[in-house]
Image 1 (cartoon, helix red, strand yellow):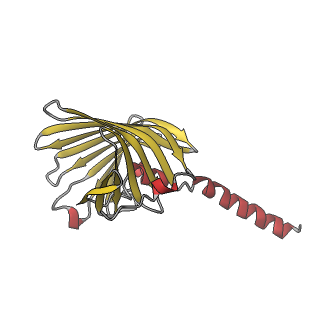
Image 2 (cartoon, rainbow, N blue to C red):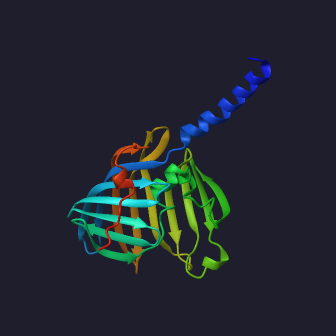
Image 3 (cartoon, rainbow, N blue to C red):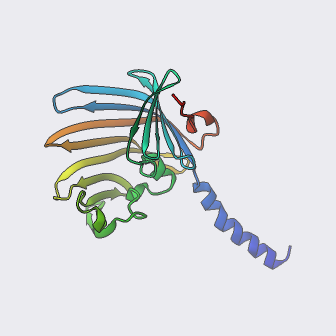
Length: 227
């Protein structure tokens, strides 16, 4: 092999190896969601979630409190029970903003805002934490406010959402990171929502996380029954 071919091979190998190692395309995980309402009412949901970034369906295989399947696709949420479609409702298109999509696409550290229409307006350091402030585009300012992100060692640890009047409406905290196939992923997420001055809490924990699962094709591309 001559020197030109050798150099070309080194360049190609150097460029391709780290990229291919990071091109994860799907995730599955067992999840538990514990919630609490302002009146003290608690709820528990247990199941397995499947997500493929190419298919863009978020599939929740719920085992408790009752066995059913929820599928989020585009702007629709489907609920299926015993192989039958029992409900179809409008929903926000969250496929690109689920924690699975952001993790698989390497966007979790900035909550996907870097590639959105939000504008980074401030960055400050607080001890070992980096706090950034993102302002929504002008077209959105009539109904939403800024978003603040806290990071530690390039891992997102918190997100605060404000309304247009600069009042906090939601907080999210990302904890207990684990390295999975070279990807840092938080296995515990705490969400606090403030609605009409009352606080709702949810704690989601993830276990048995698998990246790039080549099985369970029918789960990742769950077929919606016609009725």
